[in-house]
Image (cartoon, rainbow, N blue to C red; front, side):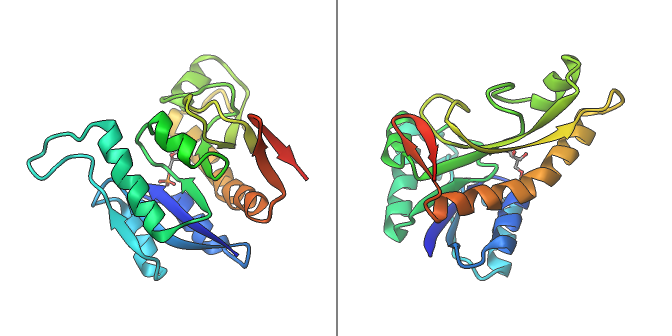
Length: 201
Ligand code: GRF
């Protein structure tokens, strides 16, 4: 059974789906947030999972530099020694050094059909472009933002009348089954990162 740490910044609905789907492939041993008021922390506590907050501002409100924050994050993770680190709505860009240190063991979920629509304000841009299909992607994290090899994707229709929120809700619903399935593939060795590619089997 693989030991998993989940990094969050917000409400943690994906975290909840990972908690609910944990069934022998993996065990969530730590939920780490950069925000003390992230709703996902409460979900972790309710499930009896250890939590930790590492703020990205110091005691006087001063911003830590990315490398200092990532070094703290890395130390906290190494202290619990997870096999896999899962980003679930973690709203911080991670430094190259951090990403390389967890290469092949670090995954993210992004609310688009990557490589289309990397970055933020995805649903707004998808609707503005007149797409009729969108979705979600789980991918290995590499230093370039949202550019890592895709492990699994799920698609949803985009309706002409969609608001960004309506589309976000539709995508989120498929994220909740996609992420646990993709994590299980990684946890049981059915997918791995090799020479920059996701290799299956
Ligand atoms: C999801 O839309 C996910 O795709 C993106 O951040 C959002 C997190 O939502 N990376 P939640 O905190 O899991 O509810």
